[in-house]
Image 1: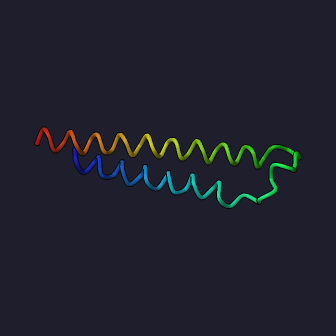
Image 2: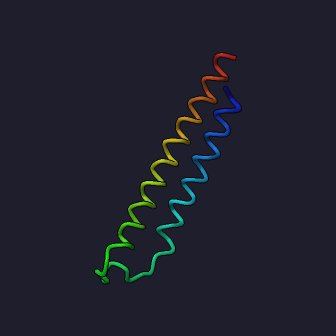
Length: 71
């Protein structure tokens, strides 16, 4: 249980880092351009990936702690 929790936690951290980096590398004036909405979609996908990373991280920590308490 602890090994699976560790793997899920690592996946969560990676998703969190990727989601944060998507938002950092957008052009600074992207909100002024209203062409097709692609950059807004990219930003919202970055937030979604970060949220999924947090969920995976919390689930992994819960699995690690439950493995410690049961083992």
